[in-house]
Image (cartoon, rainbow, N blue to C red):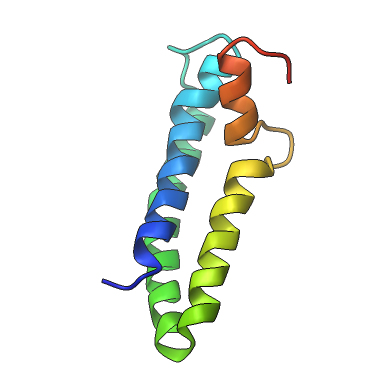
Length: 100
């Protein structure tokens, strides 16, 4: 297994958990999963697979660059929110009752 594969899978899992669990909890509607959420979550899994394949190929060319980009992608997913939504860190903080 390539060194970037676990990092990319963690990135995808974080995105999936945020979309299906943390954001609904942060908005106060944990049982309300809309069609948009399901559709978005359905795009995360194939995107993660393609990213893992791409990073695996890039790792064959330059391992340090691939690992660095994978960690950058992971940290970007954790900290920076998609447009108009909460980041995983923000959604978790709000779900725990803190002000964001």
